[in-house]
Amino acid sequence: MQTTSGLWKTMKRVGLAAMTGVILFGLVGCGGETASGGAGKVSGTVTAAGSSALLPLVKDAAAEFKKTHPDVSITLNGGGSGLGLKQVSDGTVMIGNSDVAAETKLPADKAKSLVDHKVAVVTVAPVVNKAIGDTVPGLTRDQLIGIFTGNITNWKEVGGPDKTIVLVTRPASSGTRALFREFALNNQEEASNKSLETDDSGTLLHSIASTEGAIGYVALPYLKNANNVTALAIDGVAPTLENTYNRSYPVWGYEHMYTKGEADGAVKAFLTFIMSDEFGKHIEDMGYGVASKIKEAK
Amino acid sequence: MYTSSGSLGTTSRTVVPPGRAAAKALRHDTWGRLLIRTVGFTSILLTLAIGAFLLYRGTGSFWLYGHSPLDFIISSQWNPADTMEGGGHIGAAMFIAGSLITCLLALIIATPCSISLAIFMTEIAPTWGNRIWRPVIEIFVGIPSIVYGWLGLTVLVPFIREYTPSLTGFSVLAAALVLALMMFPTVTAVTINALDSVPKTYRQAAYGLGATRWEVIRQIILPVAKRGILAALILGFARAFGEALAVAMVIGKMKAFPTSLFDATVNLTAAIAADMGNTMEGSEFNMALWSMALLLFVISVLFIFTLRYLSNAGGDTHD
Image (cartoon, each protein chain N blue to C red):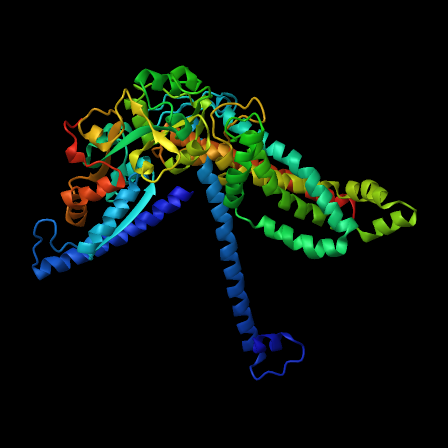
C-alpha cells in the first residue's frame, strides 16, 4: 500500500513538475537566451529515486548544483536500486539511481531503453572488529571465501586469536552484497543461515564495532567516520581509492544514474555537473571514486 | 441552530415559519447524514481496498510463479530470484516460526506481570493504583516502537552478549523481552477494564459470605473476567505479531531456525522490511514478500475474529 501511495504521489508530482518544466522552458525559449556549455541558464525540474548508497552523493551534488543553478528544482528520493530502475523505466522519475546495472534487474527490452551514466565508483571493503584487525591485517581470497561460506569458523584458522567468527551481512537484495559476492567471493553464495543481517551499512558497522570476532563488508564512504573497525586487505592489496583506480583492488563497482533515452535540459546539466572534474573532488572527499580515473574501464 | 431546535420543540416561538424551519432542519440533517455516510463508506472502502490489494499482490507468488501455498508455509528453502523469470524457492517457514516463537515467548513473559499488576490496581490498591499507575501505563502504550527497539539494542543486546552463551546478543531472548515490554502496557490496560467490569455486587456478596480477599480474586473475579483477560492477551499478541521495527533491531535476522533462546533468528516483519526496497517490483522476490505481508494480514484478521467471538460470548456470562 505504501509503495503505491508513494508512487501516486510521485506520479502527481512528476506530472506537475513536467507542466512547470514545459512552461519554464517555453519562457526561456521566448526570451531567446542560449545555454552556453553546462553553466548557462538552465531551469526546470529534476526528479530522481533509487539506491540509498548513492543518495548522499546525489544530495550533496544537488546542493552544490543549486548554488550555480538556482532555477532548477531537484527532488530526490531513496527507496532502493530496484525501485529507482523500475520508476525511471516507467517514466515516474527522470533519473533512476542504481548500484547495479539495469540488465540485472529489468527485463532486457526495458533495460535497453535506459541510458547509463556512470557517475562514481564505489569500493567495497571487508571490515572486522578492531581487536581482530590488530592481529589479522589481511586475508587471502580463499580465506575470505572460506569465512563467508561458513567453512572457516574461528579466527585462529587464519592466524588470528582463538575467537569464533561472527558473520554480519546485508540483505540478499542489497547492491553492496551483490558487489561483494561477485568480486570478492567469486560468485559463491554467503552462508545466510550463519550470518546476522543488517538493513543498512551504518547498523552493520555498529554491529561489527561492538561484537568481538565480527566480520562484514561496507562501501568506503561509510568508513570515513567509523571507529573501532578495521578494513582488511585482500591478497595483500588494501581497499583504497588508489588501488581501485589502478585496478589492483578488485571489489568495486560503478554507481549508475539512468535516464530513459538521452538526457536533456536540466537533467543533462545536472548529470554533466556530477561528472565534472570540479565535483569529482567532492566525490573523493566523500569516499567514492571518480569513474573517469579508473585505468581500464570494465 | 436556534431556529432549527426551536422548530423541533413543542412550544415554537420563533420568527421563522415552522414549515421553513423544518425544511432547514431537514436540509441540515441531510447534509450531516451525507457527510457521515461519505466518510464512513470511504473508510470502509479503503479497508476493503487494502485487503483486496494485498490479496491480489500476495497471491501473485502462487498464480504467477507457480509456487504452492503449502510449500510457502512449511518449506524453509528461501532463495527467491529478483527477476521476472523466477525459478527460486520461497519457503517462509523460518520467518513464520520466528514470529510465532518470539511472540509466544513474549506472551509467556508479559502475562503474569500484566495480570498481577491489573489485579493490584483494581482490587488491592484501587485509589492510588488508579491515580499513579493508570496514567503511567497509558503513557507506556503510546511510546513509539523505535524507542523500545533502540533500548533493546543499546541495553539488552550488550547485556545478553555479556552474561549468556549468546555470541552476539542478537537473539530470540532479546526479541521476546522487547516484545514483552511492548505488549505489557496494552495487556495490562485491557485486563484492568475486564476486571473493572465485574459487577461490584459479586465482590460484596463474596465478602459477605466471609471470603478472604485472595478467595474473592481467585474464585470470583478472575473466573468472571476470564474472557476479557483472554481478549487482552490476544490483543497484546496481535500487537507483537505485527511489530517490525523494534524486533528487527534485536533479532539478528539470521536466516536459520533457532535452536536455543540465545540464537539469532528472523521473523516475517523484519524480513519484509529488509528487502522490500531493493527488490524489483513484480519480481519473484518482491511477490514473495507480498505473500508474507498477506500472511500477516490473514493472521491478524484471524486474531480479530477470535477477539470478537470471545467478547461476544463473554457478554453472556455476566451483567
